[in-house]
Length: 365
Image (cartoon, rainbow, N blue to C red; front, side, top):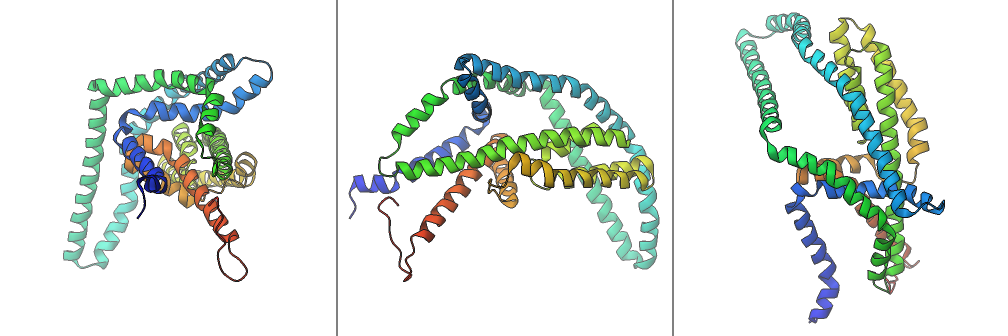
């Protein structure tokens, strides 16, 4: 029978991890500024480290890095928000015209279907389709009305937004300033026997996260700029909305291009009424995919990330379902840790096999 000390050594780490997971889930509503601050500090730490090597004091370098990032984000918002508002308003005003154009295409198809199917079956299908459409539009309207009501009267939402804007830079500054000290404390807490293996594992996690987060963020920014400019030059009226949506969703592999391409082609057809503009949109997205696949991703992300696209999509969707916005923020880091750990354990297990098929157990395993 195992002693309490042996039980703790065997299961203590798993118990602490489970308690932390439950605590994070319960506190997910208030963790967004802190998780975002940690990600921001992680992304800016190499820049602050280079400033420190150039002789700039670390606190001053932290302030410079945060001012640079906050200034860029604020500048983009001030530049894009008025234009996005105009395009969204124009799109909403044109929706009835677009819907009538869609109906003009669907009406002959519906008549042809009515001639081919028995009258009773066709009437039943038509009534079901109308009911589903009415339910979908009602659900969308209900969601939009509820969101507008919360934005107008929800003090808690305003408070959360203010806390996100105010707390995030402050917490990120302290994390950046104390980053070397935090690493030193974590290093001291590592068990002496397993410390080399844990350091190797953490270094691989850091390489994976750095390659994906920093690289993929640059890819998203480049794609957003490309699609907004290219779609505007191509003549799409909602070019900024579609381009920004495509660039943001490019964080999920293939999802951004498929979603943006669908909206661009659909809006282009409803805007022009023929297939010349939609064909141009397809050409723009084809060029964008080639640039992303052969230039941006190899140069900015690289091939050592090791995170499969399906695993990333699953992690983002699971994180959003479990913990909302905080879950989405934590999804990729957690996925990287899990993926790297599994690969590391599998590699050690495969290397432990002897030629005769038996397993050589390492004392540090």
